[in-house]
Image (cartoon, rainbow, N blue to C red; front, side, top):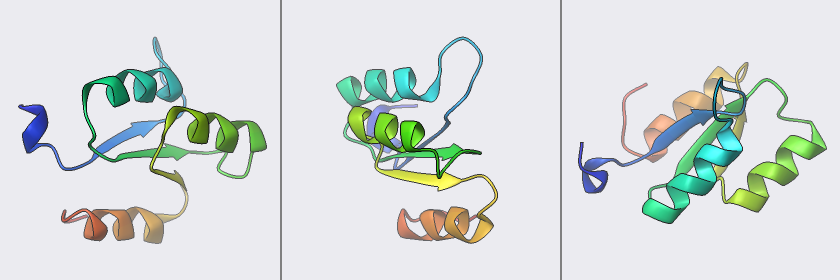
Length: 79
């Protein structure tokens, strides 16, 4: 898809090959689309700082289904 047709990018903090921080850093060089990162460690200070440092727009816990639904509504999607 064209980057212009994407309204939100969702990524995980831990992924094989490239972690979410490296992915976000690369994505921010290519687009201004908001990036939401999900993690099982949303209260870990290293995760929070790392996400902030690379420009993650929203960090949410994988267990917080209400936050996931809210992000979908905010950015115009149906979750």
